[in-house]
Length: 182
Image (cartoon, rainbow, N blue to C red; front, side, top):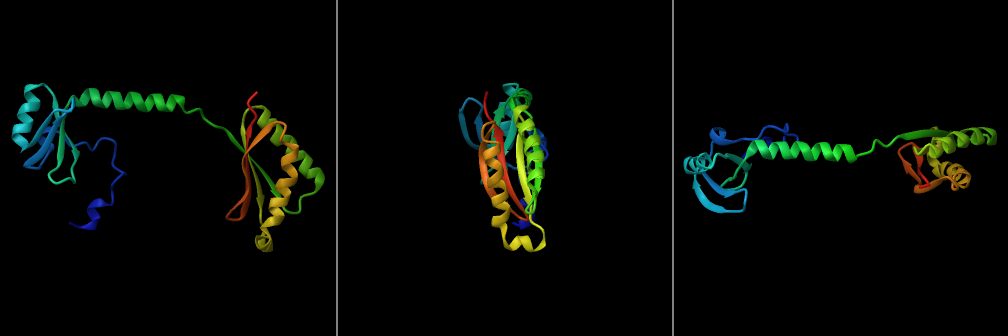
């Protein structure tokens, strides 16, 4: 079996589902939606059972030996999947993350100005990512960036929760703050 075949695993379009006559395998391990097992039967026999019940034969695990197929109401199944997806989407509140950038050599009055913004964001319920950009040689002393953020944090702790303390990601030292639950 060539490796190429497996490369698109996980990236399948949601509807590459193979069902009914499109199933090419001659033999399948077949089960029903309610857990009933038919064992290994020919594709034609499986199709006939599905047809008799007014259901579809859906290929579940094409790579199994023999492939596994399920007798189910595919339309209903798809509808429920869509419904689940919609529900999940609805429950996913869009989290608004604001970035506030600092530099290692920032002056105190700049800090005060930027902290004021960060506080406003937190008070509006937004998440704030504080970032210090390390320029050139500063990469060698990332602790300077951490120090800047550690000076800033006390100015925010009455309105925020430190989700993730100062840590390095590439050229940035980041700190992640979420709003205090009122």
